[in-house]
Length: 120
Image (cartoon, rainbow, N blue to C red):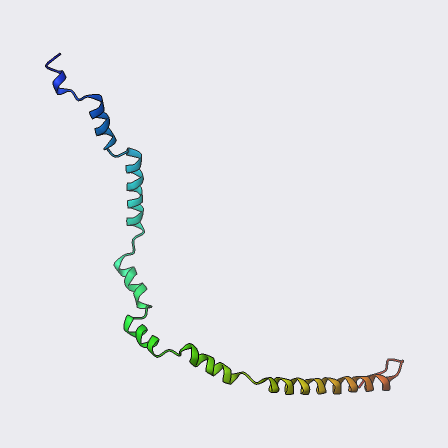
């Protein structure tokens, strides 16, 4: 027995060595994730097709340099918006036209009388 004991590992050494080993469940999970990643990887042909619709970096930089600034757009929008006086003038014209139509409808209703004859 004394000859066998020196070749045997003690319990703490065995425990330490086993804790350093990979867990079988973790390995299966990791391998499944690797397989999924390989299957979902984009092929070179798919990447080429995707890139056909993309803008090149040089084109993008060119367009960004030539884009309108916020101040340019604000200036254009300010010029496009009619002033308050224009709105008031338009509203006055609309009110006048509505009053005219209202008077015309009232006149036509009063000429037909209570019998409900033809309004035309």
